[in-house]
Image 1 (cartoon, rainbow, N blue to C red):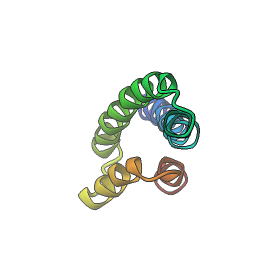
Image 2: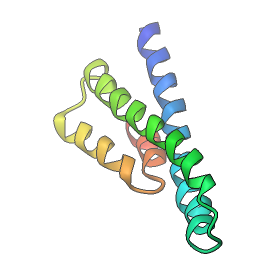
Image 3: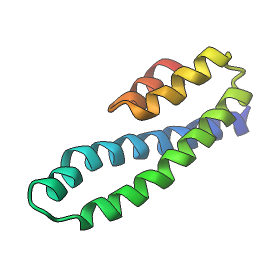
Image 4: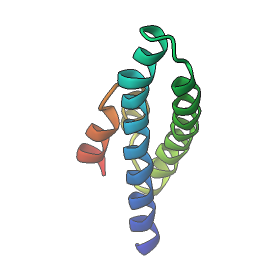
Length: 95
């Protein structure tokens, strides 16, 4: 039980970081690149977001196994990773 609680906490952290990185990428880095011609932020934030996105998907599958989610729940959780604010919804609804 302790391992599951630790896994959920770890997934929540990854989920929050992934959501924040996505919002920073969309709300700050992309405008800097396309409006002010400053692509450096997209390179940095984009790489961090990519790594966090992959960790989120791996964590979602791990939670699927540990919490015995249905395949439908897993697909919803994974789908929320590509929607701004989606991971926050997952934390509130499924964790």
